[in-house]
Amino acid sequence: MKFKVILTIIIAGFISSILIYYLKTKSTEKGENPEQTFVVKKGTVTNFTEQTGIVKAQVGAIVKVGTRATGEIVELKYQVGDYVGKGALIARIDDRELQANKRELEAQIEEQRKDIEAKEAHYLYCKKDYERELLLLSQEFTTKDSVDRAKRDLDMASAQLELSKAKLKGLEEKLEALKVKLSYYTIYAPISGYVAEITTQKGETVVAGLSAVNLITIIDTTKLEMWIYVDETDIGRTRPGMKVEYWVDAYKDKRFYGKISTIYPQPQVMNNIVYYLAIVKIDPDYAVYLRPEMTTHVRIIVEEKNDVLVCPNGAIRFEEGKYVVYVKKKEGLERRPVVLGIRDDRNTEIRSGLKEGDIVVISNIKPSRSQKPASKIEKR
Picture 1 (cartoon, rainbow, N blue to C red):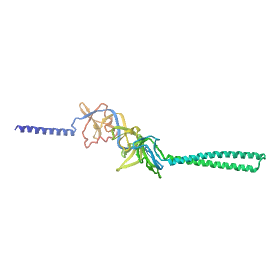
Picture 2: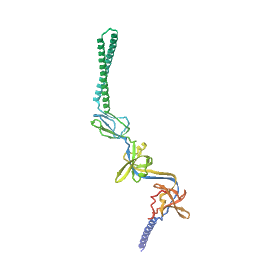
Picture 3: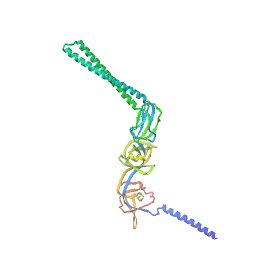
Picture 4: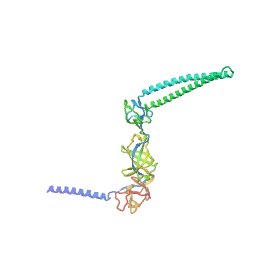
């Protein structure tokens, strides 16, 4: 008998606990829980749109370094991940044959210059001889035939001198062309950056065809930009010069900032949704954290107001065609119409209807069917 009494008490207590928990839950759902309050004060409200972006390398930030030379690679100084400074030697291709041709040409040029010196001396001699024969003819100490012979020798010496000079010029032009060709065998970095890809190795033979053979790819990680895919419903509120705030999943607690520099007129259609690209130049200091092709979460700042009255979004209701808040007074709650300004994800600007220091009630009561959701706030 005693056991039955104890069991009955336990069962009754258990049923009571379940009943109390059920009643408390129903009370919470009906909004009968204690209401939170907020003291109206001045603050900042930032109206923004949320978009998705991608980090991209700027034009010229990725350079594929190649060569127009054919031969064996005798030196390749860098590997993937190495930093390369602008102007640094990257690779060298065997150029011994061209170097030998260069030395031969230089020797021919030197020989031709000596030949020109001799012919210039002969030309000057012939010129003086001709001038002397003319002087003697004027004094009738020589014949016309001697003058004509001296003139013929002068013309021949002049022609030979000009021919030697032309030959020297041809050799020098040939040497310059050879030097240009030799420059293809020594490859220098056109930009500073990190080696992203290597397509060949030391000891391999490259064969240049109609286009340059790619040896190495360099990326300048400081030259980045962000492509923001702005939804067509938000493009009307987006303009160049607007500030943006963005972050990446790799550094969720770190914020990056910039400005829209350009909006491309050509649309991008993905999954039957129309987007427009807004371009933001990325600060080089952010290159420590950001990498090409990273996905970014972007807030485009449409409008920002400072030192205005703010009220939590949860305190604003739409009742009977008006926006209202409930102000807490000693005698109870006062229903007060308000005129709204811009809003962000937490607060709304109050243009009129409240004053600094008013205490408003933040309620979890869901709006009735006749009420308009507070998220669709209209400017007045």
